[in-house]
Length: 460
Image (cartoon, rainbow, N blue to C red; front, side, top):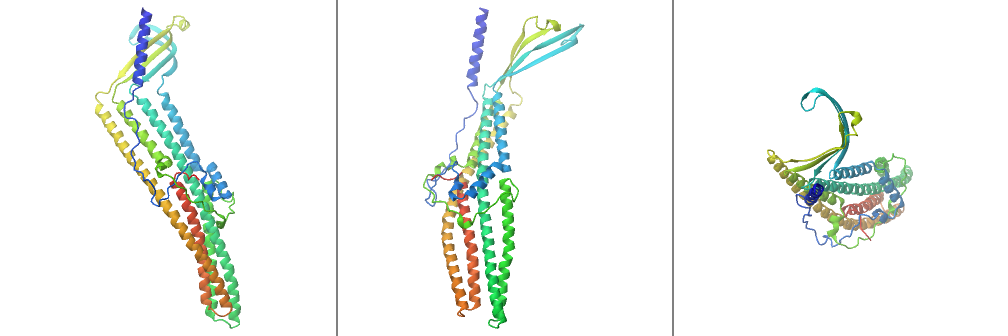
């Protein structure tokens, strides 16, 4: 009969634990409503993907190699990866709080005090195992695990965001480097041309065929071209250093041999739905997981207002003689404790209000991140469309300027046009070539910005 009573009590205790452990104080997370547009302003919606290697759309193996090196060696990215590891370990630690805690201990004492003074000197030897378990009646530890899991996801999305920014930065810096190198080449070619022109003008001036103003104008144009070369050399050097920092390598440990004219503009962006943008942007996903974590912390704060119950137990041996430690039978005890907040109730109530306020702030941060995401896509689509139009105009200008230079050179040689007309054609051609290199870089960079705005790229 006594054994049945023990079984009955055990069943009741276990049943009560199961029932209470199935309950969690606080509301489960529900994503806040975010008004998303049905389509983007330019009627050019985009289906994006975070997995596509978007940079391959530029069809440049050198860029592919540089991005691969950066993903393997960039220090900021590797540091962010360590943060993900830490969040994963933290989640594992938090999950273990749901389980009983076991420990082994042993002790030896001698004296005349055993809770009270005695007339005799006594020995005490104890060895055994003990267990303690904070019962998660109100779901406090499960809410903490929920918060830790959300923080882990936030760190993973944060890592993805850093990866996206790194890839975009490598591409932008690479395109900028190609522009500066192209501009340096244009300046060097222009200097070579103006050196030749200056020699001819000098010969004609010495022969008395042209006035001194023509010689002075040729010298001015030659000096202007020569002065631009050091400027672009500095820009090339600095940009190579910036690229080296992104790659996690020292300058000179890699080579860049590409040319701007060899770059391929990505194809037209296919149609799709912008409503999925919230599922792709890592920064938006980070904001949402932080919101999930904060929602769980409200439940934790509310649980702290309620009584906490813990169970303890001991199993082992105890004796006044070391030789009898294992011969006197098993020593055991079991007990429970309840702790309820009374006089500090207002303090816990205010903590709930603090967590609610933090949650409301997190909602606003999430909505702000979502709004920024839609605006970024709108701006990027607009920038790509208009820069491509501008590129077409600059290309026509460059072609016309080079034709004008050739005609002006022929007219000057034949004595039909003045030297001022020829110099003006040289300036126009030089400026147009630099403008063309710049607009090509801007168009390529605009596609990179669009990739970032879409949260990873777009599917084709």
